[in-house]
Amino acid sequence: MGLYRGSRLRFSDMLQVEDRDGDIHRVFVLQETTAAVPDGSLPYTVKARDTMESLAFKHYGDANKWYVIAWVNPQVFWPLDLEPGMLIYIPPKSYAASV
Image (tube, rainbow, N blue to C red):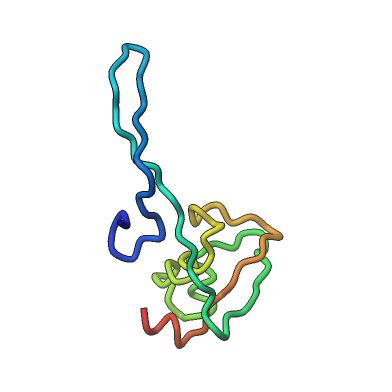
């Protein structure tokens, strides 16, 4: 089950954890799903000052499409985690238009 529709995180196993008072709590483990890289995606090496929004604007003309890039790059857990030298994939414009 996903956290929300379209989420790349889903609930995996449930663990029972005992706290220091002896109380038992159920804890769900989150697991990252792997999104397939769409055909026609371009490999891109992140440069200094790149953001998901700036890349979406550069490739799609719409900074609000940042999530399209985030979806196919699950190694970037948080969009602010982009680091220079990191290799990511930029899905084609046609893919971005369909999601």
